[in-house]
Structure formats: structure tokens, C-alpha cells
Length: 134
Image 1 (cartoon, rainbow, N blue to C red):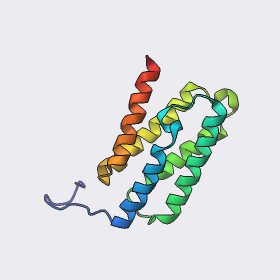
Image 2: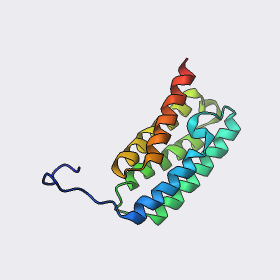
Image 3: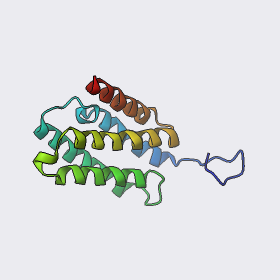
Image 4: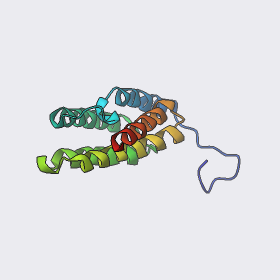
């Protein structure tokens, strides 16, 4: 429910928008980097580059006013920040920040677009992060 709308009114997600996000988050679910299974910095770097390309493609296909656009742009900036960091700064903290950004946006997309695939990805990122802390 969007604040400011009378009770009972709901924002209806355009099916084409929801479908595009569904495909995107299915692809993200296949990225082992998002579930922190990748430890090798070079492999993680390549995965982030691939994610950035997917985000760029999705943003070019979505309506600029789509509710998901700010979150996807945030993720794209996170990719740029990670890729632009010097190698000595690509430590666990940078990876954790990168994964936290994805978790936050995946939760939002899952909730607002009613996409279980995005909600599951957020949960997988959280579980993986908890395992790393132990």
C-alpha cells in the first residue's frame, strides 16, 4: 500500500515491468557472488561486472518512472564503487557493503512487486552473511 492513497486502493504493478524484474532476479539468483560463495577476488570482480551489465540492460528496458529504478540505480552505483575500488580496498568490508545493498533492494523488489525470487535472494544473501560471521 502506498502512503497517501485512500484505504483500499493498491498500486498495480505493470505486468511487463514485473516480468522484466522476475527475469533479472532469476539471473541474480544464479550469481554465486551474491550468495558469498565466491571467495576469489578476481572471480568476484568478474561477477560484479556481469551484474552491472545486467542492471544496465534492465534499466534501459524499464520505464524511467518505474518504482524499481531507484533501487536498481543504487545497485549499479554499488557495482561501480566496488569495481572502482583499489585492490587493497576490495576487502571483506567492501564485499559486505556490496551484498548488503543487494539484500536491501531485493527485499524491496520482493515486497513491492510481489516477487518471491527477489525475496528468496535477499534471504540467501542474509543466510550466507550469517555463515561468514561464525
